[in-house]
Picture (cartoon, rainbow, N blue to C red):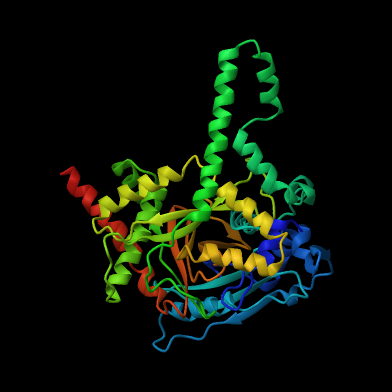
Length: 471
């Protein structure tokens, strides 16, 4: 096991379990056998889903074993709501409890719950599939890709085993991943490959161009060093009720989808990215929640969120394991004006672009995985004290997907919070919609639904102000 994956394996604590948790809402019930068939052909094609984790003082490794899907798939039914209507709170409660229930260490570290009788806010009865996978197996980008591969583009699509090429690409030589924190940083920092070296040799007689290239490499190395210093010396963000030591009891909530087309239109209207609009909506929702709780929100109030950044090469194959770094984004929660808040988010996002903070953070994880666990805990808690939340934003499929004849209506996931971070925010787009999800710790916020219902109104403020500006 690579040192980066080992670092995630050892982050489990009483306050936070290192599991990626997802919820897929199916329009029609799927048979348990149909789910198991898809798991057999898709999930179990990858050895990590057939392997338990074995570790000793020297490190950790994967050990393949026979898999009984009855150990990994649980079928249950939600009780009807007292008024016979929506029982979404019961489903969210179940997801919250499972978010902190450890996976069985003698088995491969994943489990799914197929939940019947899920009555939504629209009165429609759906089936939910709750997925829990330990972060040491892979990060969110890779796991969303593997999970989505179980689905087809048509109702009559049948799951097919991935090609040998795809499996081999996902399970490449572990030594490459072990060295990834070093090699990725080096390649990114100096931005040269063997092809560039050959080109440089050909241009050797063109001394001015060579001098310019060398100067550029020096500037890049300096930027890398500065980003490393910023990451390790950043101040703590503002002290709010959302910041503190978690007790391990989790609460989960998610929104109904916003039309992605509207988000795109608003981003164009303000000359910013879709991500800027979504992040500004998150900042506004947190501000609104804190004020509703009676807290004074100072104009200088900032909430730092750690944002995962994918560092994989774009080769068409999603590799298992963890290949991402964390970038600290400071949300301007103290700014009251929604448009001014959006512009400040855009400015801060622009500052982060083109930097090497994510690469530095991944390198730190690689080093931590090779250090004694006590040292790792102390260092990760140091970084955790500097932030309030972890926030991820993953683009999903743009068209509807199907499994065993049933359409995937909605999908949401949460990445784990490490150290003493007790808040996780997730954004996922799928089939023309974008959803917000949040997980909170009982010690910090017991009412995540009170936060999640504020995302849409914050976005609608930007819509209204954009319309008013036009007229």
